[in-house]
Image 1 (cartoon, helix red, strand yellow):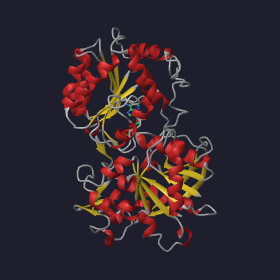
Image 2 (cartoon, rainbow, N blue to C red):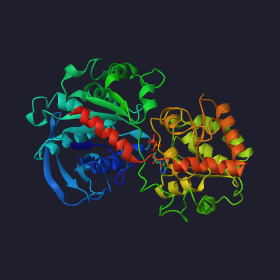
Image 3 (tube, protein in one colour):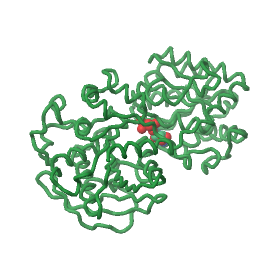
Image 4 (cartoon, rainbow, N blue to C red):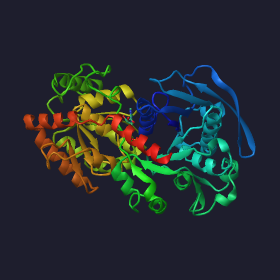
Length: 475
Ligand code: ADP
């Protein structure tokens, strides 16, 4: 099969979250199954590319013509990445927003990406059989295919899959955007693109895509309920027969303590010695001196309500008083960044916080921490808890979405891999942390728990196989 991926981010080119990890990895593994896989992305500031492959591609967007170029990057392990070059839209400080505000022309920016991907596809001798779109930024691909391109024989057999990586981000814009996107106003109705007086791009993709998927089984069920559906539960219920949950995999070339080049020492489930050295190194990185004996909690996260930071805000101080140390790496809402900086100030011997985005440090935290905390309110898949398993860092999570699908509670089974709580409440988080502390104090039990997690396999092979089956069901 020929599969074309369209996305707004992918490792190693641009990343703000888990979407980039998925788009950076999945095509490689789909290729290994014998299919063709190419990726189209925007050429953001700093993204390196070879000379333009298509120096001039004319894209009609609304009432204007956009002249962009398509560059090819160096291939990444056999997968070809094509970059849409339109500096006016993509040469910016950040991907989607700056100084706390979304870019006002985001609808046009990502409509151009979607259209450029289709026009680029048309320059190939054969059409893609599947276009795999991701999140609201590329949700217009199925809309354009079924409207503007409806009579284009080139795409006659092309099918679309839209993967929802996070339903909370929908791409909502005023009605006036319809003309700027070149879409007929008939589509502005409750059954198609309209959403409470605005245009909702994710909803539109959900309506128009041939199949839908999301990134864990549990989340695929949750999003059909009012609690998790973010207003789209009705539309998703209607499309339930076409909605699948496929858990994200992990690229163990990048996330593996046995060969991670960023660690001070490598280690494995059989020989855990290096992990203690990683802990000492991590404490040193955060300027914490006296905490070697205390269980060290790691947090790497966008600091947003979704990630359970209101719970942490309520109990992190008590957790430190009760015996934990904590290192936090993240960016996001100011009330949370300020909270952790003040916690660090209050307990400099036990708490370290860095308000930045840093891949290198993220690897060090995965390796050096004893526990990894993700008390999310909702979590489509979550990657860090899966990385943590591999690094022998025990996840403490809320039982939602992918967190629930990937972690088994050690208190309930000797094969368990972490600690989980159900009710979204600070006292539940605290009680679960106390359970973890108790196990930590019996080293033989703790070691068994660590090894249970390290033996789990969440490699991409299995998930890629499931995607390939889904593509096959489409064509
Ligand atoms: P989400 O996509 O909702 O932010 P995921 O758990 O799916 O959450 O993926 C988050 C990804 O981003 C992980 O690879 C994680 O390591 C990374 N990440 C998040 N914040 C930071 C940060 N401040 N520094 C480095 N990596 C980060």
